[in-house]
Length: 259
Figure 1 (cartoon, rainbow, N blue to C red):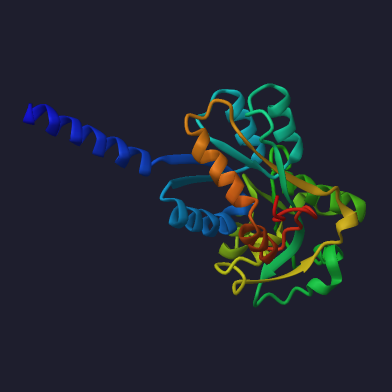
Figure 2 (tube, one colour):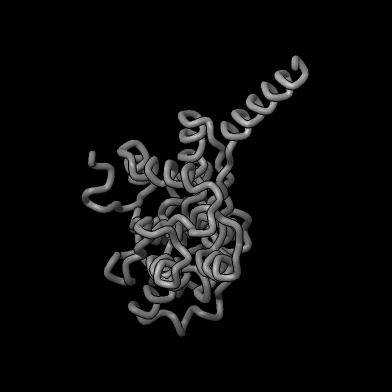
């Protein structure tokens, strides 16, 4: 009897421990890299749950999710990807949430002589040999960069200088490493504590490119829906809404408001 009771006690303790150590896997657009490292750490502190963050291009995640990738949540930099997954029945009903709108900037190393005040026209400078952008085939920020260049009738003149990153985070890395003289990157990366002292930036006019509307959803295949819902609710909280604002995101008017 004592052995049986001991085994039962150990089972219950282990069960509580496993529940407490519950982990969710979040596929997040690379523009969220630094903001979400902070947000996840805060969530883990208050909830005791673990958040595994995987950053990459939204288009690649979209394809992976269609093929059954085991993510619990998807934070896309493109609203359309989230809407398509929702329409295909791959998202938890009612979970789609438009959490932010991103911005693009022209970004160069801090010591660069490039005069960013000239805006995108500076890319015609012969001294600029390499321009980093995210691959527009699957990265929303890359598509925004292309749209802005076409709007200012510069695309054909500078396309030969492109160095393409798989996602917007890798694009910024090209500038930091010297693989590119300048880049068109997310404002959220230019403002990140890890990068803001390494570069200087100038915002690209918002009317030069379509809004980079971003949305999140809980995947129907998630095995940790309760924790996934808790994390999504946390992202909607005033604390994280304010955090996103510090990284340069625009947020919905009612985001962070009390229900």
